[in-house]
Image (cartoon, rainbow, N blue to C red; front, side, top):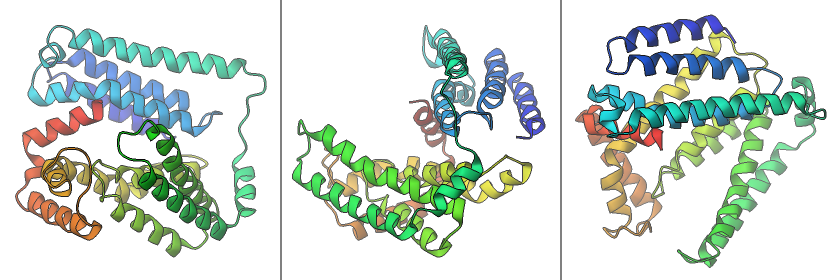
Amino acid sequence: MPHGILDFFCLILVAYGLFTPNPMEIAWFACMLIILMRLWMWKQYPAILLYLFSIQFMESHASLFEANNYGITLNELFPGSGKQTWWMASFGLLSMMVGTQILLQRARTFSIPSFEHLQHQAERISQTRLLFCILVSHGLASLVDRLIPYGSSLAQFETYISGIPNALTFAFGIHFFLTRRRPLLVYALFLYLLITSFYSYFSSWREPLVMVLVCYFVSLKKFETRELSRLGPIIIPALGLVLVWQAVKGEYREFISGGIQDQSIRVTQSEALGKFVELGTTALNENQTLDDPVISATYRRAGY
């Protein structure tokens, strides 16, 4: 990875922090970002560790930008213990990263396959059979969802079953980025998953976007500057989608649940998607996505 770009970005962060109520925290945030990337970015460790620690990094540090958005300290955002909790969470994450490094270095049997080995194994897997397994697993998950009522003691079993299509879809995406077979088929599947994911009480639309990012990163031998420009068409619309969702989710959820807040969906898929498009268009036309409550809710959402 071109760490020079990362260092320059962190330097800008530190300069920005001088004009905020939390300058020390911003400086440490920049240090933690550098530590995170240098420990896990394209080292001899599975890339999933970078993803997992990045998620934890966001969750434990996002409140800092929420406080800066209001122009207040962490103790004012969370009275009494905001700053202490933030620092404890940050050092807890640092301890976890260092501890994981030590364990992996001591593991005698630890190894990851080479990039060439991944490509070779991907070539041996049938893309069409993998797609067939995805469709079958979706049907199984849908059947189990109908058989197990809401609030049942078997809900955890349903959760595990519904995770099978996601795991297979991850495998399908990684297979494509390693082999580049049938791009039109893959793009069509992604658009289908993204569009239908809005037929949900929660923000399930994040899952297809996360899948694309993870599968894309697996296919890279190294991360160069040009990769940032390639990721732009994915990341920028995704961030816009987050703001649109935060602006409309209250009214959208009320619509699809029929005004009853029990997380059940009482409208058809076409009605739900039509309503989301209507609300999203209104939010964009009226610049609701840039309202202070929406921005603050987005920071808070990232933090939990």
